[in-house]
Image (cartoon, rainbow, N blue to C red; front, side, top):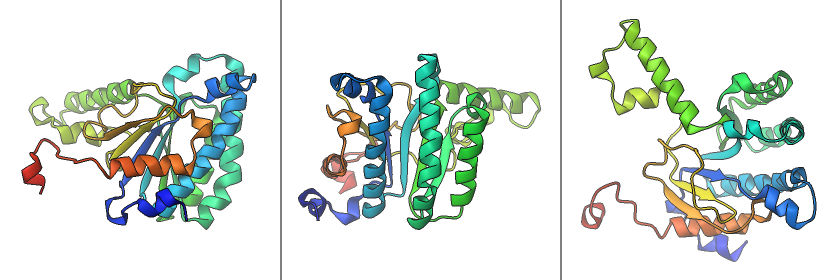
Length: 247
């Protein structure tokens, strides 16, 4: 057993961990390779973190896989990422079944290539009844897209007379988010040293603990994940209350 893992308190495991997997391109550049080389190696880190989450008892793991802004990248990189996604989903489906992992996606699926979407939906359907870790891939996702769509849906409900503007609450908005069936993240990790959220789960991380590491994503191992969990376990989560109230 890892020394770091042995230090983790089993009673204070975050229920939901979200990760901004950043640094694939810079890692590839350091190796004098094309950006896709970094994405290919980043798959190993996904596997490491998924396995570590399962071992620790994390219930939800959300990975920022492809943002709506990423569609503006060079077409060769976009095509390569879609091919990599399909290849790995097909390869890992049997592992998901073996380890009781359920796959979900959030994001604007209307922009995804049809063949990619079909392969994803096949894995989602096959793992739908698994009861262990829920692995959520944020694909063609951004918070501004999500919130805009939620406001449109709520406005349409008002126009149809199904909802009064006075009845709109935080719960109303949450009901129309992509994550309506998923608890808010307890911990958000961002790799590569960048100190920003990049349009990711802006509503949902209102009270999440934030953890930033300079490690580039392809170098992020399960021990790095354990470090983030240990750091999380040192935090005092007050949710607006005082320390005395929490005690």
